[in-house]
Length: 188
Image (cartoon, rainbow, N blue to C red; front, top):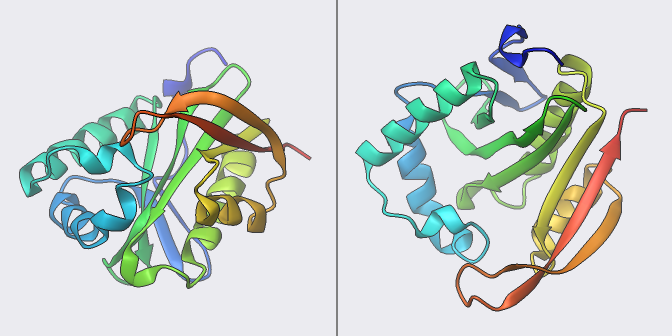
């Protein structure tokens, strides 16, 4: 792709129960609240859950995230209950290679909404957005091999396990070597 910044695509789209959109200025306080409510469940799997947290820092992060969206460098998305401003979780398309194009989906769920299928629905919606709107050739999901809930989301969303990357990274809490599961779907 010559210059991804010239790509025009919508800032939001909907699934059955969710509005999925780019983070926007003003999202910081609600994002902070959602993360703080879910922090203990996020810490084992998300390195960013160990960073310093404040409303101001989250507002700065979402504004930086919006800039990265506009620059087409990273597509950080917030998951909202359709018709509300209630944050259910977060997702996005990361580690972008526009030359392929290839994307990696990340996701997390607010504790109060866990186990209700919202993340699987979001991943299916984000995957469709990647293939249909962004013309992806490849979409990946990576997770710690011990993160059974994340791996289950990948499988429910139709992502076959492509590889187990042994001793691919270090656990951000224990610093022990860890394995990473790599799930991937290709354009049909």
